[in-house]
Amino acid sequence: MGGIGSQRWLTSLAAACLVVLLLAACGGTTTTTKTTTKRAAAVRAAPTGPCRTSVRDIVARFLHVAPASITTAVGTGNDGYPECTYVTKVPGGKRVSLNADVDTGPQPYFVLERTIVEAAQPFTPTRLSPAPQAVMHLGLEASWFPNRDQLMSTDGLKLLTVTVAWPGASPRREIALATALSRPYLKVLTAKQAKAVANGFPCGCS
Image (tube, rainbow, N blue to C red; front, side):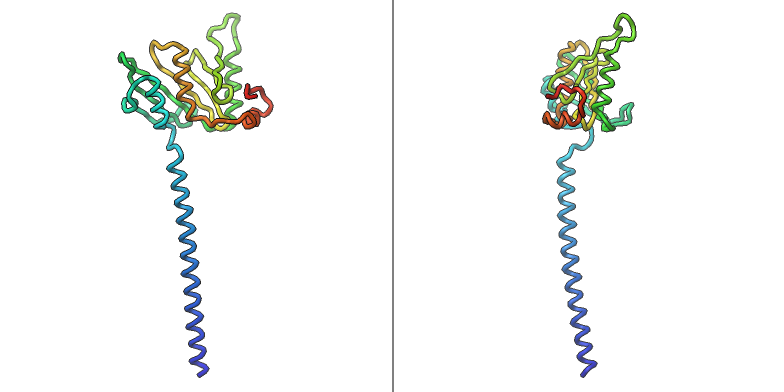
């Protein structure tokens, strides 16, 4: 009798352990599934690289062309960071090329400030190239570099450099196009966030 009772007790214990393991496995699977689903949703919501459909559509509206007429190409800039080139032809047949370099390196605000200061310094009695022009209401210290046809801007997280090749366009139009292209790449900062990024340096963000 004792042997039979012990056997039954062991059988019951094994069954109970099996139930616990199954419940734990189910719980773990549910948690894993929820985590995987959240990650997948985050990936879908996040931009997939430097080329963005929203930017292509903005360029299309600005240039009055069909979005499908704009080709995009992902590449790597001279700085080693990803870039996207948007190319199309405007009415009249002229080719317009826009290159957006997305630099996610450290201290983008200070890199931009240094670039502006260096470009603004005349190294000869007569300035050989025009000084950078401030572009208002675009990130922190956004500036247009006329001798490069480039707009540089930052949100404190990334340094964005947009190079414009638009034959026959006025500088005003080039700056406007580069500004419109830049906005989707930059996070909109509050004045408090902007001052935190500038860390006491003048930033025009009051």
